[in-house]
Image 1 (cartoon, rainbow, N blue to C red):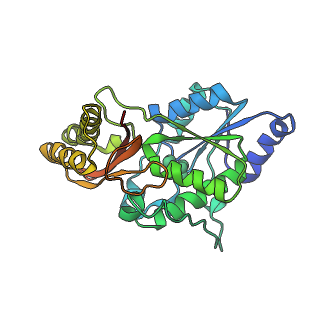
Image 2 (cartoon, rainbow, N blue to C red; image 1 turned 180 degrees about the vertical axis):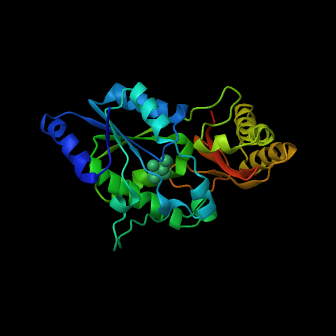
Length: 282
Ligand code: PAF
């Protein structure tokens, strides 16, 4: 595996592959890899000739400076895991290369950025995400980029941006990877104390209780949300948001007909966690 640190070097490394007509699979990440990242890399490896993974903790998408400081980092461990997964190029640019002095351009996606993560973390969060993803797409120019369903709103924002800006990349969204007890994999999970790790199950427990209720015939979103909130409170966790929305527009849904996205965020033991499931009626 080749580790490259500049935009010029990633372009040079990819040039022969592009000329040979090879497909480029790209997994953008902020590092501290877990099984969720590994599944994206594996999917990229299965479906692409060349696999590029970026490792860049993007400062502009953090609304809370202490969250940015506390974000776990371990490049050596990440490089070992990426190499095991058959990644060809690990692209780890410096912040000064990504945001050189005088940087003054941002990508603003409207509508699908205003609720859930956008409402709680602030609109600047998705401006940061959309801008860095657009830049990474321009640097790598992948055939396909792979994102996790755990960040469902982010995946929707990226899809919208690539469509609206005619960026020639296919977006593939891969299923959320969970611990055996249901906790969604996240780089932030390492910051949970043993007690908080146990409490963190409130999120997946609330979502699974709603899935079971839908399977049993409940369709009223208010009823589903109230009982999911009760499940969380029973474990001592208050959601920051808990919503049932259209998976395409993120507009609130009153009744489940077809598919709807149920998404949750909560602070557990000082760590902000998110999770979601697709509720399917019928
Ligand atoms: O999901 C992430 O890790 C980040 O938001 C991304 C897509 C790499 C952009 O910084």
